[in-house]
Amino acid sequence: MKLPANFTFSQSSIQDYLDCPRRFELRYVLKIRWPAPITEPVIEYEHHVEQGLQFHQMVQQFVNNLPLELIFAGATDPDLQTWWNNFIASAPIASYSGKKYPEYRLSIPFEGHRLVAQYDLVLADEKTGSAVIFDWKTSRVHPKKEFMALRAQSIIYPFVLAEAGLPSFMIQPEKIKMIYWYPNFPDKPDIISYDIKRHQHTAAILKDTISNILDTDQGSFLLTTDTRRCQFCNYRSLCSRGEKAGKLDQLEEDVLDIFQSDSLDNFDFNETPEIRF
Ligand code: SF4
Image (tube, rainbow, N blue to C red):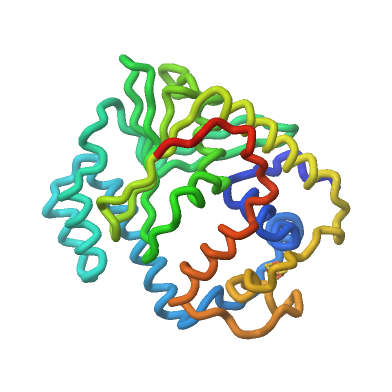
């Protein structure tokens, strides 16, 4: 299957392909919008998504040096206030120096297309040649560290940064680390290191994954065999995988459990160096 020349791969599209090839086809190739909730209660889910967006905006304002009282004034939601207080008390950025790149987007040419990464924050220190990628996760459940290390995001973000560099300097893979910081769990960040072996292995994995996508004919993308995933997928009625969305209170625990069980079997990280946390 030939994708348009301007097709851009991202951590979301790669993750969708790994979770369910058919979902990748429906979402990114056929671009089918299917108006079904991902989970229920819908209002609660949408509220949680909105809270997450607001938290990201508040941190961006913080990084851009807006006065704290002005930032906090917009946080009327109790969860958001707790997250913000945790952020200020824990100061996850404070121990790192360098130039701040909030809401920063990089893309590189890759396998005839582009590969993009949209960072919540990159903190780059030209003196030491190092960079820290921060990603804010407002989930209610803290995922296992091993799970986060194997997410498409965790391999694509450092990879793109190492390949693209920043305006003033390039960054060696060994000098990159990625930190997932959870406002609900301020004392349990996941810190994922990176190095040249992981970089080379990531390149091979991404090439292989994209090659598999390009070698699949339209209409031949397989549906996931794990129907539990379909409970939280908006295409479930289109795929004849049920009508009713899964419950929000099961979303993060069950879906994370599903992901942990097999979605990353496509990734062979057996050859990668040990990931330190
Ligand atoms: S409903 Fe299931 S099979 Fe269909 S796209 Fe979603 S995850 Fe894949």
